[in-house]
Image 1 (cartoon, rainbow, N blue to C red):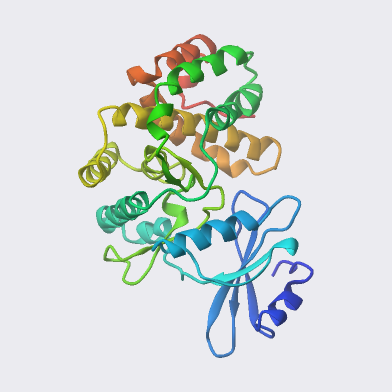
Image 2 (cartoon, helix red, strand yellow):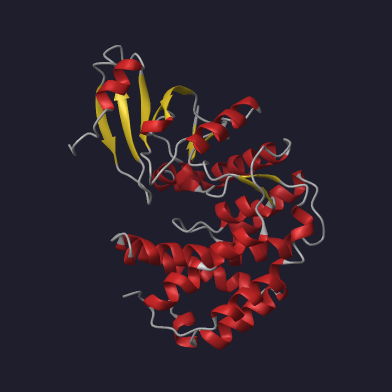
Length: 329
């Protein structure tokens, strides 16, 4: 077992969980750590350690409270000490959508239907009290591509032109997200917990939502259906997108905005995965780049992305694009 963080046992004792067994859970791409906590009476909880200055649990607590108060299924918070980074929360069990589908690939369609229906429910609520997903945020995220991926590949690119291309591509979309929805921003199969009977479309548990903003409803659809960590066929993507559009009133620009946000998000992810390798020493994320790149190329083919597609044509070599981004050194 890896060493437990200082202050863990004291926090559990104050929360009424003193003497509980503590088992570390493999972490994600952040500085957060997770532990499963079990009492002798067999009750259990999850313990999150999100220590300052790298992490701040306050946004997680704020979004969890809002989601639960508006009929969604975020973990119940049992105890928290945000100043020290501790949060004790409800344990949603072991049926993470990604892992469950690895074991039950024949149940892919109903699992994704449940995920789509969860977004329909979320988007039917008034937007939460969160910051807007504004143009500077989109630009900052898209800029991770030129900041991290391009140097890692030794590419000397037109950074200013890249920003101008994104301005041109995203500007037509911005008025359509003024009356926005809550955007969880990392909604995909690794952050969805299947509750109740996983074989049915039971209510789905939400995790990893601390970066929520108010933005365009297509964003979390892209996150789910162009998953960086799991193959989602184009046929399933189209079917689930149609399911959403059948249940929510969308305008004639929705498909274009979906492509815009797909390209923006995928460019961001390529940059993030490159950063995780170069800065944080986590090379395993490089294996996901070809999948992300393939989805990004499909998005760039939409006419709404013409300015960005032209930038890619002028700045990223064809052989690199055809190889799914190539290998980052």
